[in-house]
Image (cartoon, rainbow, N blue to C red):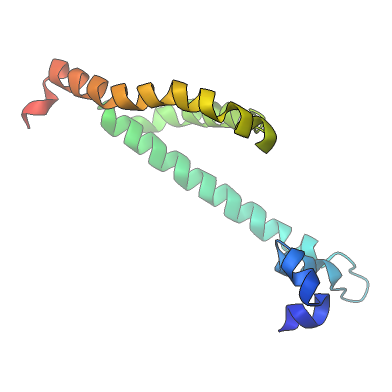
Length: 129
């Protein structure tokens, strides 16, 4: 109800994030940009989330390859993740035109990958368990 009173019904239909738009309209005396007060909390939460996911990734990587001291792989995994994150996103109009090519390339990979994992488990001797 508050969003409709603030933006009107048609405006609310067009807004993707009405909460963020509402925060941008609020002014507290001399503070004109209230959303900047949320930035430190967002930054800390993002850092904690990235650290947790990086640790879980290193733990799984260490478990898969039987690395006892998997903590030493964390800087390498972090660097790889950061560099993968720097790859620019594919625009939607490009992706829709390249969708068929992407599916033709990725489908055989997803079909063969479980077989390769099974063969590598057989070679290592882990499939006896």
